[in-house]
Image 1 (cartoon, rainbow, N blue to C red):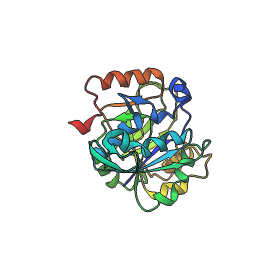
Image 2 (spheres, rainbow, N blue to C red):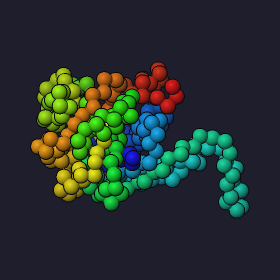
Image 3 (spheres, one colour):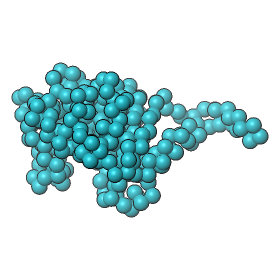
Image 4 (tube, rainbow, N blue to C red):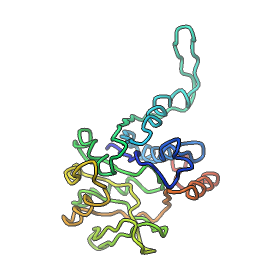
Length: 258
């Protein structure tokens, strides 16, 4: 299954960092938060990534184009340009970086990837949040249902929109984006999607969290997986500081070294 990561927004609430780079490339522990997200999926064996870029997409392109040279020791013959790669860390990932437009909204970015996502189920997540979510359990929950999409429900930090759930049927009954209610569960991303969801997105001005998800609720096709572990988004400079502090002291999402 492909792992689709939304990475094209402006990140205006983190302007201290995003004036020079897209938010998924803001570093935690010396690595882009995008890298942390990819390491989680790769830990579970999912290593085919599709990055949906927009704002400063060249920053993301250049990062992966130069990834091996930054992570691996090498010897270079400056006369011929021949490179001999020596010992070092290199990921066995395949990465597709798409420019989905600087002004596209989240649904529009997904829609623009239809040609490479229509052949089967795919993961979808945001490029600014980390978690120790059990990806295998998430997939199992989705496969046991008849849903077109399964989202990961997490404990609400207090400033996000709340979900209303039917726990007996494992269905999402209402989706309120950035509501005023504290407590309860929120959409934490980490979706599993069937290709049918692509038909619910109208155009590049469609927000994934609005019409497509509301349509799935109306069709009784939106389910959830309840993750009770760690989840943290990077929506502000304060959030970045929280993540940096966690990284320096046994970060809960660093499953690949446990």
